[in-house]
Structure formats: structure tokens, C-alpha cells
Image (cartoon, rainbow, N blue to C red; front, side, top):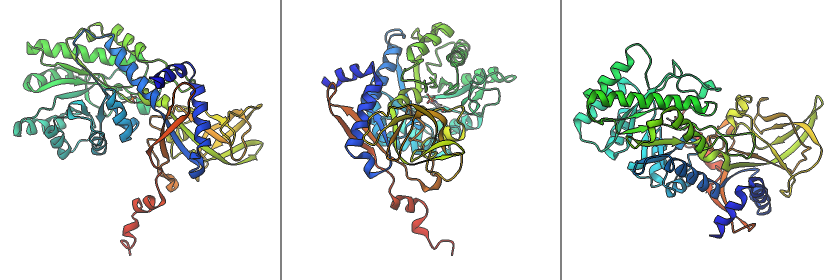
Length: 451
Ligand SMILES: *Cc1c(COP(=O)(O)O)cnc(C)c1O
């Protein structure tokens, strides 16, 4: 109970909890063993899971089945999947590896959805044997499902992923509903809609429609437009079938995250409002709903801490050489304009650094010039031994490791406060990759293979 009170207290001031966690991490020596560690705010993740469930529970007609799944690619860590499972959230998986993680976390088949664009026959067969929901991406995959369904009965709910072709958001690489996107069955190509209706009429076992219009950078109105198209197609198919053939709409994920402050905006309430505005009948209980959020559940609850190893001034520019770089912020390093991150400065004891802001480059440890988390960023001047914190990194950053320079995957610790203002407790959720593991994964056991 005390822990919950504490969460509420900090919910109003996330920076206070973060400062406390940084001080505790430094004080408890987490950065003595390794120069970079990653933290996850366990209570924060629980609070986001509850906020998601509440936003939909408040919107749907009583009795509407709603399954929230977590897009595993956002944070593929078994302890995270199990934490979310405890909050009733299943898994959206898109590879055999992600399915293995979901199963290792104990997520049941009924709460698992398989969505990838290039599923092999073996993957499809396993998913149908397990009873996992599958959304087929394309016509050739649908033909594979035809054969599998004819060969053996399955409990798997089966659907098609639709590309509503509603257009791109601000980040092309993350926009999945463009006219030529690689994902799903196109809806607006000539003849496509009629063909889709026929596909459903010919296959009584096809009961779901799925769409996911994209991630960060896609405005809520565009996501909602895609869902409106999905709902309209379901109504058309059901009218043609003369029954409620489609019983479930999987509306994907994609709620963007605010990377510029501690505010959780836009949030699920705004998302639900946008859906209600675009497709008023969506929540009337005619369809069960599945969601697949990733970034919005985890991003705000992750924090990277890294030691400043050296500082220098080059061409008049102060540069801090730290241990956080491309290995854990790959998108920021390669596409800095699309993926800006905040950087917070702490001293060697983990206290917030004060002082006149100076424009500094925050560099990572990798051997290429572009390995910068921030350029000309105004921060109190950093010194060797200081610590930088990089908030909002709980999804797609340190959980999507990039093995450049054989830099190890850093450790991930969950943290929880013992009551209001109480001590911070850390729990190791993933150890740092060891040098032995790096050698093994680099073919260490096959040293003579090319001789
Ligand atoms: C990546 C992905 C998601 C999750 O997207 P977020 O922006 O992290 O919410 C959901 N569904 C599918 C099919 C995806 O590819």
C-alpha cells in the first residue's frame, strides 16, 4: 500500500523520483561495476498499464471483450513481459524470438497475437498448433493459412492485416499506412476492397481485421482514420456475409510519446477520444477489440545512466565522451532530427549538476564521428566522473541493442521506492552482456572454421 502512495506522490513530480533513483544508483555502486546502466521504473510501468486499461474500460460498452497486448519489440525483456502480464496485458509478437520471450514470460496463447510480415510455414504451423491469434500480411500468406486450416483444426483466431493507405506521419520509416507500404493487404488499390470482401465470404474461419498505421510521428487523427476504415470494412463484410463474421478488430498500437518533457502526452484518453470522433460505433460492443501498444507503455519509464569518461574542447566546442551512444540510442544517432533525446546532468555523487549552461556535444563510446546523443546541447558543464541520464528510453532504445564495436548490451535494473521518499530498491532484470558472451556470439567456438 505504501508503495502505491509513493507512486501517486511522484506521479506529480517524476523528476523527483528520477533524481532519487539516480542518486541511489550511484550510491549503491551500479555505475562502479559498469560505466553504463539502464533503469526501469516498475511502478511507472504498472501505472501506464492501468491507465491504458482504464481509458478503454471507460469507453467500451459493458461486456465488450478487450485484449491489450504489448508490442514485444518495444522492450523484449522477459521480466517486463511478465510484469505487464500481471497487469492483464498480453503480447504482440513478430518473430520466433519474440514468441519465445512471450512464452518464457508465461503469457498464454489466448493473450498472444502474431503479426510479422514474413512468417515461415513452420512459424504459422506452430502458431496455429498453440492457438495464437494470427494476422496474415498478404495473399500468399493467406493461401498458406488455407492449407493449414484445411489440414488441421485450430483454435487460433485468424485475421488479415489491412493497410488503409491513409498516408504517412512525420517519420517515413515508421509510417506503415502509406500507398506503397510493405505491410498488409492494401485497401484502396483498384479492386482491392471487393477482393477482400470475397476473401472473407469464402473463408468462414477468417474472423478478424487488423491495422497498425504507424508509430512515433503519426498523428492521432491519422491513426483514427485508419481504424475508421477498418471498422467500415468490417461492417461491409458482415453485411455481405449476413452475419457477424468479423467479431474482433485489432487496432494496433502507435500512440506517440512526448520526448521533450516529463508529461505523458497525448495519452490514451486523447487516443480514445480521437477514435470515438472518427468511428463512433467502434466501442458499441459489436466488436471485441485488441490493441498492440509498445512505445507508449514503456518509453517514459526507462532511463539510461552513463559515466562521463573524459571531456575536451575541440574547435571551440566542449565535448563530453560518455559510455552512452549508438549501441543504445541507434535511431537518435543515425536520425537525430527525428529522435531527439533529453540529456540530464548529474555530478559524480549522483546529485543534479547546477551551473551555467554551456553548449556541449554529448558523445558515445563508438568509433565513428556521428556517435553523438546530442549536439551543442545547453547543459551545466560536465566533468570526468559525472553522470548523464537519458530519460524516455524505455522502449526501442536500450532494449534494441546495436552491437557496433562489440559494445556489450548494458544491464537493466528495475527500481521501486520503499514508501514515500523511501529507499530505492533495484532488481536486476537483465545482466550486462559479458565479454565471454561477446566472444561466444562472435563465433568464439568456431575459431578454426575458416582456416
Ligand atoms: C511496432 C508495432 C506496434 C507497436 O507500435 P508502438 O508505436 O510501439 O505502439 C504494434 N503493432 C504492430 C503490428 C507493430 O509493428
